[in-house]
Image (cartoon, rainbow, N blue to C red; front, side, top):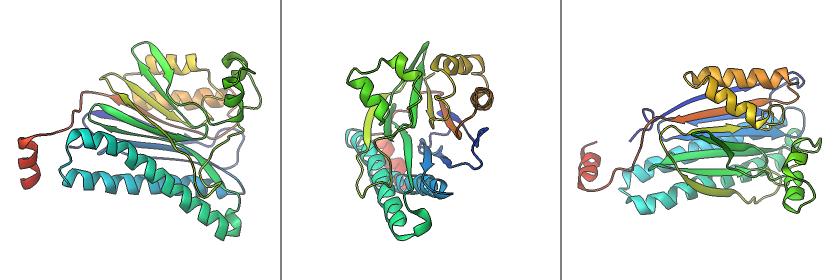
Length: 274
């Protein structure tokens, strides 16, 4: 089952007003409901190499694995668990490729990337992230960050040294404690959420929330909701109007209708003749 009729999305990336090149990368596969944002770092042009490897690897591995699952006639309960594992394992593989590339190619030494990705399936979404690229959900009037940054500042908030309000004004927001390519192995944080029609899911690099308050992101989505492309352009414009100190990338997904997994005899017959 393709999800193209179940999910609408827009994606956009921008260099910003200060950087001279874009080290972010974005990708999607609307058929399987996969969306990825990566924010590269380290060395001249090496950041964009790391983020590009991350997005390309995750897209290829997850797409291949999901197609195998579809052909294998996996029952829904097993499939639910497997989707998250598929996403996590693809990101871990991307980490090893980036790390090995950085170790063997001098021009890529020290490169790495943060990443956030999600995979929709059976009225659920698997969410995975490393670093401070984020995923937000807008459900009704509640705009909520579903990922927690892997950053020094977030650790200080967790330990009570800063309040969330104080942290939002801090100038030390971008010291990440976890990234792809820094070490041979990486811990990928994953979890699953139930999905409802009308939900919006926003994946973004830190160039957006560093420049635009959550309340303004929420307001922009609500105001231009009839046109997702316009939402994306307005969020980029807001980031640049507020300084555009970093590259800005986002993927915005709107859930149009329910997408339960196909199970049972009818599905097996479809697979035999599909």
